[in-house]
Length: 221
Image (cartoon, rainbow, N blue to C red; front, top):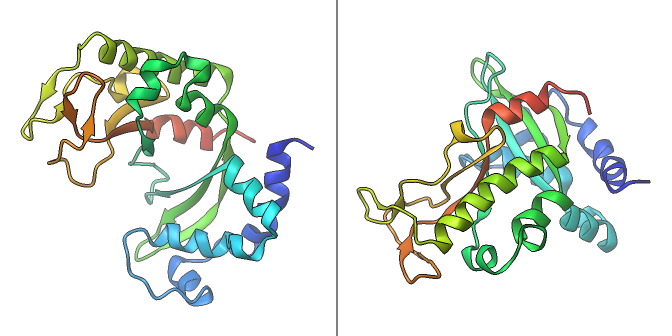
């Protein structure tokens, strides 16, 4: 049995119980009182409930999966791209692609996408997409990673913007079919990330393009 098949075997029985329920109904069923913006993530945490699993199974899921939620609009369109952990520039500079944390992250993990869809006055939980990036898709991520690495190594980042810490020439969504670089900070006012050259910038991360995710949702598993 492959790693992905094991993941499906663990998660699918849990997920099937809650398909097509509204967010309001799921909050009642799962006894969630919160009105936080990340309510969908709180719901999924309760649905999966790692505390119900034995230690080995919980560790297996933690090692091999990334849980993400998306919210389609009423026209089945995804507006938001999907963010991932902040870029580690020191790891990027010292490693080649195959030894980089970005490659290891995207090449070894299954992205479990929990799909919600907006309705007139609520949202509904529609199901799950299990996503593993193909070699061609990983190569697209590599092209962005390599460009950022070269920019850092060559002191070619254009840093400025209103806050003085924004990078103005990172790869954008229209530059790549799969991924782009965007801020990861809640607040873009702080230059909290120290680069190898001693300059400071706001927190950035890789984002999977909303258009790419939409395309994958329309493909069969």
